[in-house]
Length: 222
Image 1 (cartoon, rainbow, N blue to C red):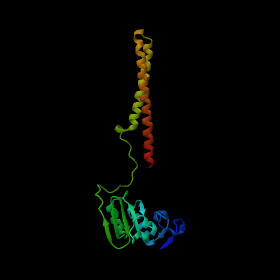
Image 2 (tube, rainbow, N blue to C red; image 1 turned 180 degrees about the vertical axis):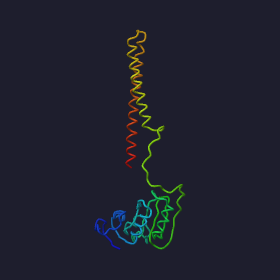
Image 3 (cartoon, rainbow, N blue to C red; image 1 turned 45 degrees about the vertical axis):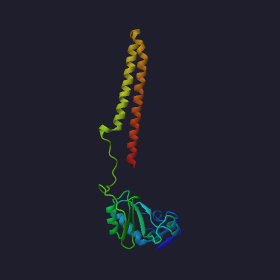
């Protein structure tokens, strides 16, 4: 084991775990780092086995930080052999099986906080069971395009088209009535109001279309 007063003091050549950074493993409260190579080798093996990122909530803890967070006096975090891993992107049952295969014998489950503690200490387990999940997590997929019938883009474009055609139609009717007999002239103000309604509808449709396109683009970037 090698100790550093701050993870930034670690020479780049001394870090051998490609899926993790020194900052992830260092104490969250002080920045101090204890490099336990055996534990980190097992963590890297677990990451490779699962084939997806491990979100490390807590790894090494300095004694002062461990006291501040109410950690156990003999916590394995103090030895750099324990890791609290979020279950946001993992199936708990599959994660525990893979962790045990990688050599983590201490397993603590915290479903209310959605993480699992693993360490290389003696074989033991504690905590509540995670609720059963309908299925294991699948690899991330690009967002599917909307079905045509439900497409906001289609609806927005349709509203814009109706509004534009309606406004143009009202203007044609106004022009025709303006040349008609005077008895019909009182209708012109009402038609003018109707034309503005169609103009607003067209603008709203254009706005919906632009928003839908931007939203689809943003989802594709995530």
